[in-house]
Image 1 (cartoon, rainbow, N blue to C red):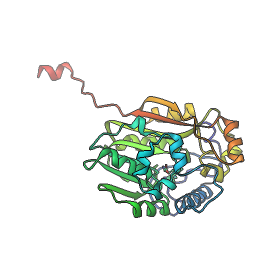
Image 2 (image 1 turned 45 degrees about the vertical axis):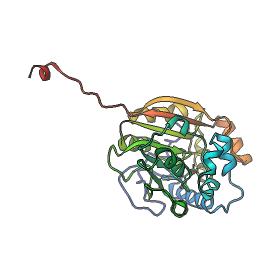
Image 3 (image 1 turned 120 degrees about the horizontal axis):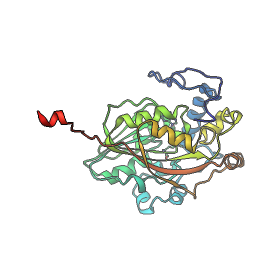
Image 4 (image 1 turned 60 degrees about the vertical axis):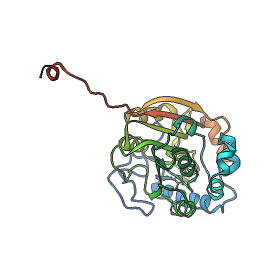
Length: 294
Ligand SMILES: C[S@@+](CC[C@H](N)C(=O)[O-])C[C@H]1O[C@@H](n2cnc3c(N)ncnc32)[C@H](O)[C@@H]1O
């Protein structure tokens, strides 16, 4: 990730050491952001999004945002209002995900659960949805609103997923991966938990230019989905390194940040919202001549 892997304040930390979660073995590449500070900012910002207590966020939230991104009003009408009002995504990735009845879906960074509940309506009673998030207040709100069969929420980090290999048909994520200091680990984990032939459909913030080190170091701007955003080629390279094949990449031109500071930074680096679809290749069995002759 150009612009992020600069020598910095943190080197070789484990994901999960900060932010009150003990987990795992993934080592982070050095970045110029202080991870303790970043995790603190993320915890506060998304607690406030869940509680609907913050009035001056850098980014938009709620029903008007969702409608502007392309969520059908009839779908939003059928979802819990509290989940819709805490929606903080950046795109409508369901057009690419094309969920089918019976599918097993994982939502990375599920927030207050709006996309999880929307997915539940699409996969029906034979499907299942798991939402994973790190912020306790987001998870508590989603649990409170959950009246759906086969919908579960788990606390965890997207860099180290607490799920078995090949356990999902589709992984979705909306406005979250830019927040991770180790995007390569996130894509590697998404690829691991997808079955062969499975799909990754996401919306996220990417930039045209790598973000300068001093801006990367601003934890509050990172937590607001800007300073941690990858340059587009680096992001796609991380997806390819995980063994996922890009199928579609499209802009979400209606998305924009709220605050002057966020607008200034996003315009400086060409930050924009995109949606994309990537596939985990299906298993192919190559028959060799020795096998045929036996
Ligand atoms: C911008 S919000 C988007 C939430 C949800 N996808 C939506 O569309 O409303 C980002 C979410 O990612 C969660 N998050 C941030 N970093 C995370 C990580 N490393 N692992 C798991 N969740 C994370 C935050 O707690 C927050 O709920």
